[in-house]
Length: 161
Image (cartoon, rainbow, N blue to C red; front, side):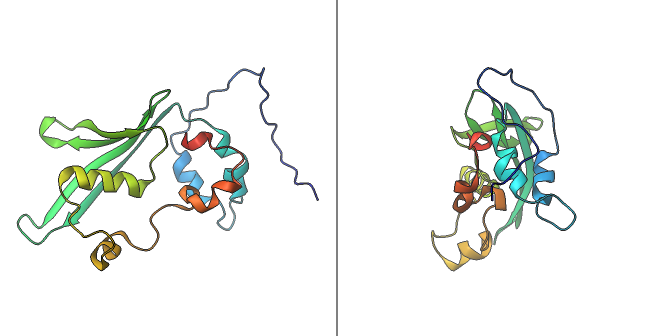
């Protein structure tokens, strides 16, 4: 049986459509839950969107064994097309300005961005592959739509390129 979709895919001669949706990441996380559309909406439709302006800011903290015992830090994943995806780190001493600490052509997962921020701040102190690193990061290190094992289900990789 051929799978039908309710939307048309663009063709080469059609003009681009610009959509503004500041909550797309939140809405994407709800896909597949009871009473929400299936995850196929991401694989077959949302994955075709190319983010031309993107910022996803997050606040983090890390407990350490010496004073001040708790380090709070903030950062963001940022992109302004056609530029690279960037990890930004907030510098609270410069009146909350963000500084780019790393960039690359492919989108960062939230965990990858957090790791880059921790390394930049000297907070990545757990030995690679150690139990301490596992307990800090946890078993699942990405959201379902960021998981590389499912990239083959996507119609397009536009959303992360």
